[in-house]
Length: 419
Image (cartoon, rainbow, N blue to C red; front, side, top):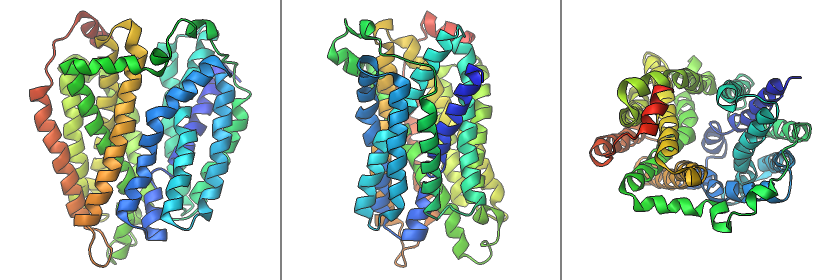
């Protein structure tokens, strides 16, 4: 197998594991277990908790003590064992701790997979900038494949979704030990302080107003991402309780409908260079925020029958909502920071989105839904839920252009022109 094919296979399995349960765990929680919304919010906070410190910790370990590909394999094997035990859990508190343990193993593999891929490509004298994106896009395809697998086998509310994820995680863990060696680079790390290794020096960026504002909005947009991941699938499942909708395609195969969001991602990634050159980075970020308003608003008024087009359009809009801020945001960080802290600054950006943003979105949404949008019969007022989420995104979009002020520097102009 060529190195590109080996890395493609790694990415497919990497995101298949996540896709097998991430969007359908809500359906399992509410439709199967009938546990509360506030407790479910805590479940989705586990991604944020794990993202705050585990990638940095495993990065230190792989840089100092053990090959990255071996650590990557170990983390997936441990994650597979945890996922296999998850169906045995019969109370929400224990479920939280088990899923947290799984995320502690899984979240670091996202950055470790990049480390392994970059190292393998460089050692094969390939261009990382040119050759990695076409490899990474197969991860999104793996995520879509997992959604379709779980949906077509009617396992969206079943424990089998965790068994499927566990089996693929175990396979990837074993496969990882066959990947090209990525040894610790002790010499590279020897003259770096422990503070710099953890990326804590990047927190000094908060002293600069434009970065303080940017990272704050990163956290707020990270919360929006958790809302759609946590509740999209179970929202469609709830239409099954209404006779006129229960036999529609969207209710029978909601994960397939939701997978349109990931298909949309691959298309909007290709459109980003055009939008950056045409409108600039600030307005691309703003388009992302307005897309979140549409994402939630279309869900509020859609249904699986005559309103299916709204749900499908919402999924299409997701590609713009997710990719435009994440990619343009990483470009902003890359070109607005000094070379000495670019790596740690990117880590801080991810920490604000997937760490603190995920925590904020998970806890707040669970409490709000329980307090204001859960009816006496424990059903959900989805129209009100999605409208409140749309209102949240709209407030962010209105405030952002007035408070986020900056001037292009030469590096940013060059990056946009060549994007």
